Image (cartoon, rainbow, N blue to C red; front, side, top):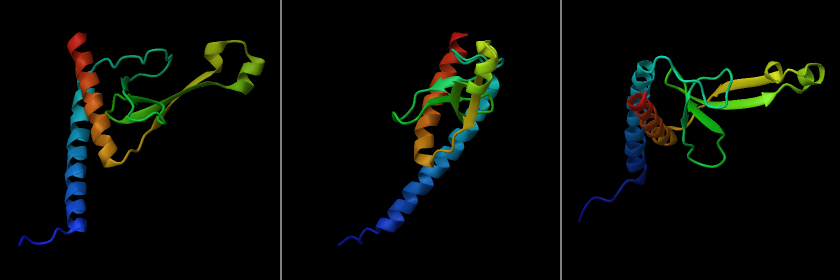
Length: 125
């Protein structure tokens, strides 16, 4: 009769595999991002640069790969206080790249999607 399965040990092994994969993909993302020079302006943005990464779920905003190989959420808006005194839409617009921290299992999926998008960009320029 085989030894009984230790659920805690199996989960620990799975977590270690995902963490190792995430670290390897993090390094690969840095290499791929460094190969893109100049980094493209993000479509529809005035000041932000990055490559769109298809989100995993619907609750995540606009996820982009930055030129440093990290993930960011692009937040675009209008400074309402400034807009009240200035009619210049560009001057009242703000774009912010908010760093994203995602768990290793989600990171693996995002990293794969980002590498596919970034290498497609490299192939097509």
